[in-house]
Image (cartoon, rainbow, N blue to C red; front, side, top):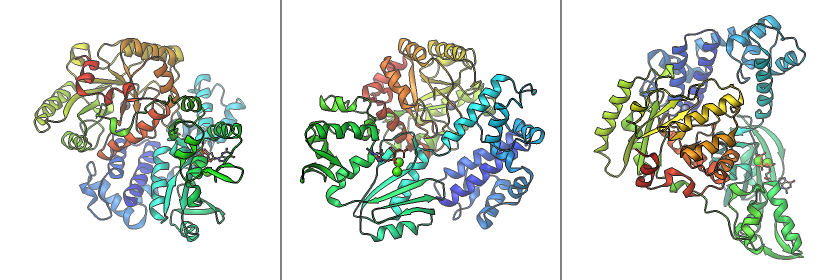
Length: 559
Ligand code: DGT
Ligand code: CA
Ligand code: CA
Ligand code: ZN
């Protein structure tokens, strides 16, 4: 819903500016929470009272109402006026906090990520209090990462835009191709193919989400959208739909390998079809093209020239795990910590997805912001047990998401952990430890007999936070040895583990849990992105513990 998203974005910006100007951390947190709640709210706040959104009190409601009327609110305007643009640009650099940003701007005139990189490289910041060599190196890495990520977006943003574009146009046939169809975690631009008459191009250019027309032709139109993302729309002949999908799905490397095989047979493969001279061998369907080349159909997530061509020729492609294989979710939150929905509502939404089991894993006490206590956790367990009676077909698992301390220990001792059905353990602080220390930290967590799953292991946030540094081979060996699953966190800005590390972990014999890490009901649907990561890593149902029947899962959890 557009109104919800825009209002949430404004409130999120307000929270950031409020933090930058030294605002109270708990209020920052409540703005952020309300922004998330508004974005995830199933009804349009320009229609219903915004006070019906959980976490939105009178003060926030007034701001949102003013925003809905005039596209901003007084307090936001004030803070926008008080915080120089340079400082705001600087805070986009990962690991750079507000205090340092203000200091760099005021004392050194550093007013952009590029200026920061220059100041570090020229040695101008050497010896500045609070900025040791390690901090400076991290900041420089952050600037580089910001530049690299600047042009790519995570798959959640891209998928929503692709669906919006397709819903806005009418065609006989339409689909997205490119890296989005391959389910990559970041997307450079969106490629849409259509079988349609010429008028689709004019209709496309006239859409309200178009901010700039980059190229307008009969066969291809490229636009920049208001969110900054480029969309290419191509009109293709119905007779060569399959060839066009094959070509524009890529990857380029996969296509090169496929084309070579065609050439070996004396044929030619293009976006129009597979040909022998003038004769069409296959063109209308993608399946026919792969079949004609003597190979199995290669699912798009595998098309990276990572061994899939040889495997398809031998008929040995894996039976990839699919969304409807998932029998449950093992990492979700409620409003007891930083989720926005109640235990009752989250469990009901889990059941509505047809799950056979559903774990509630609210944060443990070491994440001070969440104000969790053992009493609250035990109280929640009682509620979960009472609720269980309403769900004869779905097992409610009472779990927790523990915090892995720098030394690898977790929030609660064994006798408390033993009482949980499932323990996810995650890193939420001290992200920049050395590789050796971080490796030890993860191994110690894996060796804890009550830790079942390592949550979002690299802790990266695409475009915002780099992955932590660890010797992943060593971590995965420990996970395999101790029977600790690695999580694939399905939140699209996390996609964590990323698919290359999943593939490495599988090689070491690790099992995986594909979890939504939901903080609101709509997040449960993010599992489609986690499945994309898993498919890109060649995982089958056997590799993923939450495709297993309840009994087998419980045996794995060993309680
Ligand atoms: P992206 O947009 O950077 O996330 O990645 P892709 O894979 O979507 O790349 P894109 O948008 O440049 O092109 C879409 C697909 O079209 C690409 O995966 C393969 C195909 N393609 C585009 N240009 C070429 C080319 O010059 N040669 C070959 N073989 N294929 C191409
Ligand atoms: Ca693309
Ligand atoms: Ca493209
Ligand atoms: Zn977490």
